[in-house]
Length: 345
Figure 1 (cartoon, rainbow, N blue to C red):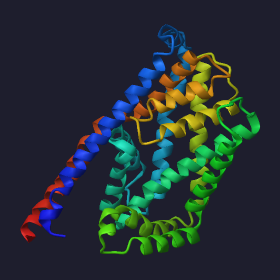
Figure 2: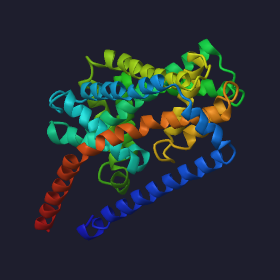
Figure 3: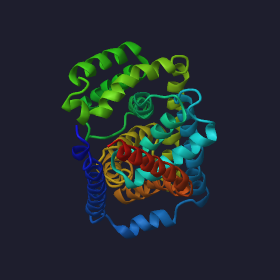
């Protein structure tokens, strides 16, 4: 493909990302508006104002150890030598969280892939696979505790049929296979290589998908001796997430069993992962109000949603001071690449 044809692609991608961010903002705003117009805002405010101050501090403060656990796992998943230490993994985790507020579909996580590939002898495919691997571990951990809470606590929720739980179990099993099975990784790579042949128009459009398929088996091979404890660590990480959310119910003086809270809030968190809103705002809040209807008043569930939203906005606020050097490095690299491309023309 000629350079003239390739030149407009970067501005087009930028415009597409801006439109995606604007759409996410509009969807979040619309859902919040539709939800709160049906609620008594005064009662939501009273629930927050009368919250137990000690438990409020304790529950929100859990964000820091949870972020540290995420950084430790990122450090373990990255190939040896790709990151200088856990401190760097912690900073990159905060920076990616900050970028995720401004870009749709958690694309801010790609900055972690960028610096893993830049600082270590890591291929692009493996660097991208690291982020997908972490997300699959997150989904596996979230589904595990969701189903365990449902099996033990049997939450009263009529809006979800039995087929939903079976489908969720199948999705969790698929995540487990993908993060553990080298055979499945090899089969997926062979399938993608056949469906997306190198050099074709499809390969250019689906370049990252092809790179991910190539890098996935390589990443599993790198993680061969670490997978046996990365997966349990992910379960611990998501237990901490769900325990924090249960602490929010104590903060608001709500009487919801831990198993029920873990199961239903996990579903709300999964709804918040849909790439339609800003940091899950809106979809997660609506899901909480609907799912917890048998246990708490809608206004109390909405107040709980406000507290849960701090999990998505406090780490980005902490990460903002760290963003400048990383973004400056990315911009400098892009400028050098552009100058090199112009000189070769």
